Image (tube, rainbow, N blue to C red):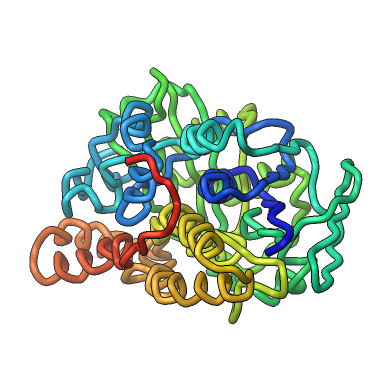
Length: 401
């Protein structure tokens, strides 16, 4: 690459991680992010497997532990709040449903953002609106900033990637819905969780959850449901909250109080769950990273690992090759088997997470109670082990160890 200027679209987890490694390899990196500043808060994500190894190579593991959320594990509850099954955090060597290191997405993104400075330029409150490739680079048009030239553009902008839409085609061609919708928000509603990530299932494929946040009294709430396609405006938050309120009316447990708290939640998020599948993650001088190229959905617990490992591998291949085409083929070769395994859903899939009937809900609790016993332990151990099922190459990247 004669032009070593690289544009990364997306300032969440994958984008700043890539910027960090590219900066160490000598590239000039610009990150464009739609939000006006790094997004704080959010829900918890896992640092596990090879993703944890990459964080360690970045010198961030100790700081991640310092801001990790203290949770005892996951507990299924009935309508009266009684535990029907639990899986403690130390099950499966700290790599179970709730991993040893659970960190708020915003806290992890901030660690990565700070690590990428001062060598990375950030364009906040902006986005990519057009890409024009030629043999020597990519001319990028922004919504607000003047057009610029880059040697490579990387879309790390999530499952609704603007870069993917411009370079590869419409979202519907690449996103495979799971028939699940999910919403998250933060509340300080008084709830005695006892340190547990508590989850309640109601007939009709409804899932209500509450888990401790990092700050005292902070609760991260979730309401998910199974459904066919729903037409809604992604910009109309009030309408999205109404969809949730209608679906969960009378669901039981703490649902009524959580719905009341949702009405005033400033960080409400609503989205369908879907996996992103592409035959190739690059076209010319445009490549995809993380959820933009291979979203696995929260059901797998591997999205953060895929983002961190993908960033390390993509930067490493670019650092090791003289030709971006060789590097992008290498990125695909190293990452494809890891992604393929990571995208395989846990046993039961969407139905296991959000069972539709009272009988299926009881069976889910029975299944969790058996997770640490044979034969379920072996089946689940293989699922959780996917996070580490990659041999990370040693690239010419000066890593902090």
